[in-house]
Image (tube, rainbow, N blue to C red; front, side):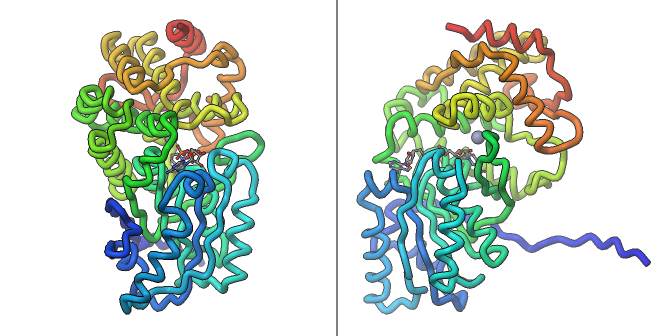
Length: 377
Ligand SMILES: NC(=O)c1ccc[n+]([C@@H]2O[C@H](COP(=O)([O-])OP(=O)(O)OC[C@H]3O[C@@H](n4cnc5c(N)ncnc54)[C@H](O)[C@@H]3O)[C@@H](O)[C@H]2O)c1
Ligand SMILES: [Zn+2]
């Protein structure tokens, strides 16, 4: 006897951009938490957000109190824990264990909520905890960095680093909701603010030439942290990532190709080579510049197009070089790790023109060396 049944899951990916989420008059979070028969919620806040931001733990508690005073029925906010932010949040399983322990302590069931407020790294770690407790509790992500808003929080991936390898342990899960509030961005460090735009350059190169033109036009104001100018690029980038997940046909990455990981084979390796001190967004900027230079060397991409992408990254004050690129042997291990992650053939996305990606299944080591040399200052 044999039964081979195909089936589909009815999934919904809910993403809302709304300024001043924790203003007592803002009902977006209320709508997301209402009407599910749940009585409980717990929250985790990135220590970087808590330190810098008036919208930290106190604001969340006040918002819940204000809703109750106004007669709205919402789950009880049982706890708000501050957890480490930055890549350190992903370099061990402390936060994952903390989330699981808090779900047990506060009787968080599968209809209860975990609210995570923070950068991409913290969201990845808290998210992993929520996929494991009860095999999955509802996660409301509130991203607080440019990169988390335009990319990380849109993803259906959660994970932590192990064995010095990025995202080695993780799980796919669609969050209950993703709520983006630009107010958080005002307290971001300039380096972290700019880092998120490498993912925007990435997806513009792959999918949206008009977005690249927009970023080039606005680069100086984005680099100067002008939020009004930056938001349209963040929103468009988020939308393109979301569309890829919901309409791209492979949300859980079952196929060989990972098209949105353009520039990431070297980026992930560089992050690991620097002991995770190089921020992901900066590593991606270097990775994009390297792959564009490589594509030019092997004749896939015109010289002018490769130079255009690098110039755009530099206009955003993003790096296109790192001294550890010179350690080519170590860097090349990134290719093997990339292949190992998905299995099957090595599949790397390269550009043949802005807006025209192409999968390649091998990379020429001499051309990688030449590309690295061409980027050196
Ligand atoms: N799951 C996915 O699909 C996905 C996609 C892309 C990237 N990522 C991951 O996201 C991570 C990078 O995220 P990131 O760029 O947001 O950096 P990050 O999470 O490392 O945060 C950078 C720093 O900013 C601080 N911070 C966060 N919000 C703040 C605020 N509003 N004000 C002041 N400080 C604040 C943090 O504490 C941290 O020190 C990487 O680990 C990357 O692998 C995941
Ligand atoms: Zn990335």
